[in-house]
Image (cartoon, rainbow, N blue to C red):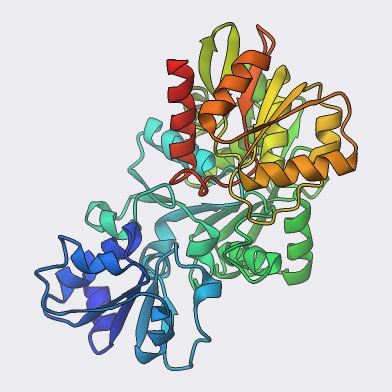
Length: 459
C-alpha cells in the first residue's frame, strides 16, 4: 500500500484537516513515504504546533485557529479527519480532492474488508465479528471507529487477512469506495450538530452500500424504517442485497423463526444460530447485531459450528448495558453508550426491572418525542435529569403529561449518584442510559461511564 500512496500523492500538495488520532496516523504514513514532502496541518486547535511529534519536522506548515478551514481549496488533496464536522467546511472547489484515510484504505484493501455502520450497535457487531473470526482461527484485524486508525495496521495485513472495520458516518461521508461485505444496522437521529440536516447524516451512512461494486454483499436491517425508506429511494444497488429481519417475509435472506436465525439462499435454507442455546448479549437490539455478525462471518467462510461457539463465548463491551454491581442493595447498570432515545428504550426493555433512570447530557437537538409515552408505561418510578438535554427532556415530558413519576434534576454526577442511592428501591435497578451525548461534562461516553462507575464504588 505504501507504493500506492506514493504514486497517489507524489505530485500533489497535501493538507491534513484535523490532527486527532486519525490525522496523526495519516501524517505518520505520509511522512514515512515522503520524508521531505511539504505537508500542511489545518486545525482550529493552536496547540498542535507544540506537539512533540511535529516540532522537529522542518517540512510542516501550520494553519491553525478560527477560520483555518477556509484554506482547504489551496491544495490538491485534503485528508479530512472524522472529527471535523462537514458543516464547518467551506464550499469545496473543483480543484481540491477531499478524501480521507478511510477512503484511501478501502480503495486498496476493500476487497478484504467487512465494514459495519449504523447509529447504534456498530461497536458491538464489529467486535463480535472479530471475535468469531479469531475463535475460528482466521487471520483478522479490527480497525476504524473502534479506536484504531486503518493506516496503523497496514504492515500487519496479509493476503488472507479479514479486516473488520467499524465505520462512523463521519468516516463514510466522502468515501467513493466500500468494503466487500458491508453491514448497515440501523439509522436513527444522531450527530445532528455535525450535519446540515438529518438527511445528510442518512446519506453518509448509505454510502457503505452505494459505493460497493458488483459482486459485493450489502447486509442491512429491513426492519429499520429510516433505512427502508432510503433504500426504496435509491435501490437497486449493483451489490448482492442481503436483508435481515426478526419479522421476516418470504423475500428476507436472514430471519428469525422459533428462536432460530436462518440464512436462505437460492438453493437451501441454513440454520445459522439457535438463540435458545444462550448468548451473553441480551435484548432485541442485540438479536439484530447477532444476525448481522453471523451472516458476515458465514459469507467469509466461517462454519456454522464456529459461528455458534464464537457468539456464546463473547462477553459484550463496556458501557453497553454493563452490570456495574449491587451496592447498598441497588443494582447499578452503565449504558453510557446510549446517546439517542431509541437506545435508552431498548436498554430499559432489556433489563425490565428499572426503578431509576438517568437521562440527559449535551443537547444536540434530537427529537425525544418517542421517549415520553414509553416512560409513562414503563413502570420506572424515578427520573434523574442532568445537563441541558436533561433539562429539555424534563420540560417537554411535563408538557406531554407524565404519569406517577418522580422528577429530579442534578447539577453533576456526584448529585446523580446521591439521588439515585436515596430514591431507588432496594433490589431494583438504577440505569444510566442518558439518551444524550456526553460532551458537556466529559470527553466521551467512556469517560462518562467510568466516572459513573467510580462514584458508585466510592459511595
